[in-house]
Image (cartoon, rainbow, N blue to C red; front, side, top):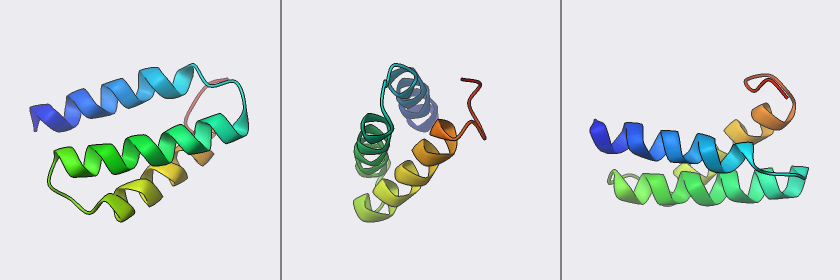
Length: 65
């Protein structure tokens, strides 16, 4: 559980520094895949989840930009 929290916290920090939509999506997918590998999950699924989260963040649904 502690690994998941650390990975999510780092993901939030990295995604907050993105300037463009492409950067946000690319980093979201990469972080999602990496996080999935760290916690023993499927990297493709992790990338898709990261991509979705990044898209929501970029659109202002879950981030206050």
